[in-house]
Structures are given as structure tokens and as C-alpha cells.
Length: 148
Image (tube, rainbow, N blue to C red):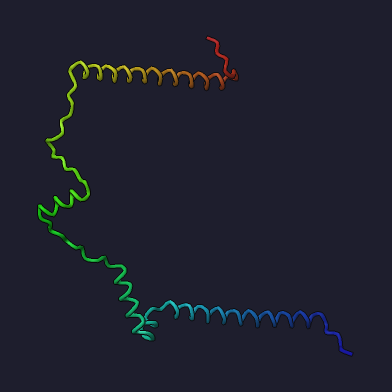
């Protein structure tokens, strides 16, 4: 027969175990933090594996640094041959002439622009008045009904 443990002793035992678990957790977390700091220290890896780190740095430098540009100085015959091979056509600045429009065409263009601007102003004014009228009617409780 086992003797029944009084409830207060059980509670004390549970509290003691919880304190022990918390203390162990604190120690484990501290060890984890120290180990993470050690893993993040690159100097430690260089000291432990110097040749591997030197090789990695060399490979990274080879990949990251761009190669030296290869400069070609072609002669005129080489350029002509290249243009023929790729069917290139070279036009000089003075080769192409723009068609000139007459005075009447210029005046017609100006008039059309002025008419377009005037029309846009009238349309904008009409839209503004329509929106303002609709907003005014809505605020008076008359939905879409105008009395003038």
C-alpha cells in the first residue's frame, strides 16, 4: 500500500520540477546563442580551413569580376566585308530628304489644332457643369430631377 501524498506536497513537487525545466531551458538557450555566434564568425572558418577559403574567394572573384574587353581595330576593308556579310545598309545624314509641306498645309494644321483645343474646352466645361448639377440635385434630395 502506498501512502497518499498530500495535495500541497504534490503542488510543491510540480513547482520544483517546473523551476528545474526553466533553468535547463535557460542554459540550453544560452548555449544555442553562443553556438550561433561561433557559426557566424567567418574568421573561425578561415583559421580552420585556410586553403578551402582561399579557393572559395578565388572562385568568387573569378565569377564576380568582369572579363577584360577585347578591343578590335578593324580596317575599312574589314568593315565593308562585315557589312556585306550581314547585309547592312549605311545611309549618310544628307542622303534622306524630308518632304516639305506647303504654306496652306501648315495653316490647315494650325487651324485644326485650335479647333480641337476649343472643342476640348467646351466639352470640359459641359462635363463640369453636369457633374456639379447632379451633385447639387443629390444634396437637395432630388435625384436626377432639375427644375430651372
